[in-house]
Amino acid sequence: MSKSNKKKKYRYGMDRRTQFQLQAMMLPATLLVLLFCIVPLFGILIAFKDYRPVSGVAGIFTSPWNNFKNFEILFRNYDFWPMLKNTLGINLLNNLISIPVTLFFALMLNEVLNARFKSLIQTVTYMPHFLSWVVFGGLFMTLLSTDNGFVNTILMNLGIIREPIGFMSEPKYFWAISAVTSLLKELGWGAILYIAAIAGVDQELYEAAMMDGAGRFKRMWYITIPSIKSTVMIMVIFAISGMLNNNFTQIYVFQNSLNISASQVIDTYVYEYGLGQLQFGMAQAVTLTKSVIAIVLLLGANKLSNRITDSGLF
Image 1 (tube, rainbow, N blue to C red):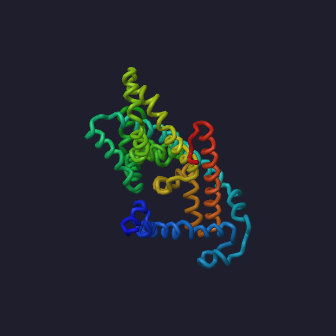
Image 2: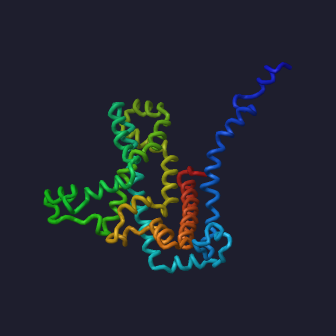
Image 3: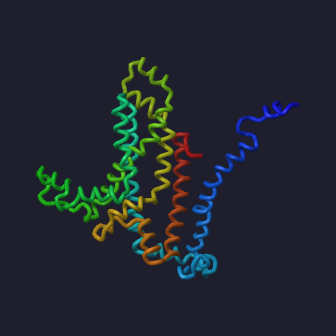
């Protein structure tokens, strides 16, 4: 048998040389995951040890065990439960607003027929995602300022208020400000997945509905939304599993001593105790607790989704 006939037995991309090249391309990513995701997992041991920063990396393995002392201190700390309430409250409000609004925005954007206008809308709504929270948050703090801030000026000129409102200093406004600014910053970027899912809907369904006299809103309600139901449920599952994860940079930018009662969340708590007070054992206990709860929420949300909609992550 000739060499040419032997080569025909291999499918494209399945010969050893091509496979070696593909595996070599994966090597850098694999090393990055190993270095920054797998190796740091040894830090979990700190949560169960009396670790001192002066002992360095070796102290992770040589420090004496204290069993669950860090967890006991955590749950008995009077700051823990208000912090947990703020974390869940901010995330719940954010998800209740962002998921339906982002889905509605994607549905409306899909109905825009003018390509140039559609591109303009996408560009304008995508741009805030690439801005730092320091810049974006600083802009909003300026707009909400009591010293000639745009929002207070408008409200006073309309006669709605008589004196400026301290939006950034009063705790009762913090959750709403966090949810609204997060929505405005991530609206366009969050709609990308929905738009991609909508693009995969069978066009023949729309054509059949149009022949039956269905308008745009009926087509969206009876065709588009049911067709992307699995995508929506995946986003809901991710949102539920991430209920204990706040955007640290956003919260840290907006946080101050006056609104601390409503802005102290798990991530800022870990930063304060872990880096501020060098309580690495306590910080790791908080992080581990958050990870365990996130896994439970993920499994629970996925199971509930499978029961209700027959769709989920697994």
